[in-house]
Length: 222
Image (cartoon, rainbow, N blue to C red):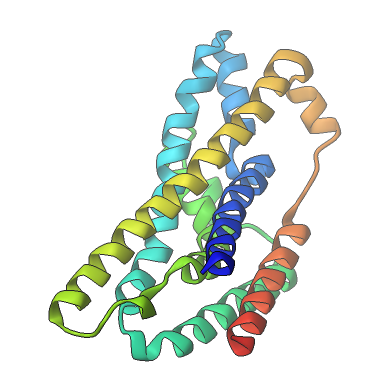
């Protein structure tokens, strides 16, 4: 029981760390917040820009995680669901390595629609897929007894858990991205970002493959 508690705590830690990782990645939108603050010449625009970025990222998490929250309540298919999720994450990671170009649709979204841009960017980069194996690891559906009432409570638990995982991930993403944006706004500026731009696409794709492979290994092992 103690070992299980530590495992679940570790998975929640990974949820938070993945949010830090996503927040540090400029592809998730913090340079847009810096740009808004510099154009308006007020730091309040920095915080204002992160509201739609956070909402879009959170909704992108839910779009990916919620369907699995529905099907993972089918305890007898738990093993197959985790295998499918791990293979999906790995496949998308390989795709991102082979096709690193961003979808053109992202460039057509006007700056005024930050929430929509954040939603589409998170989906295009597989941000939700990255936390999917972590979410499935947190689920402990086999602890409930069978029956209609248990199944109902199980479904409600998983739906709430999906929202909570997405919220924790998004919160750490916003805090990290906000810190990066503040440092760029206060000390560095967009010219520094343009000169020293760091692209994490290859690292991102590789991490998707690594997360999927680790999830597959642990599923087969356990």
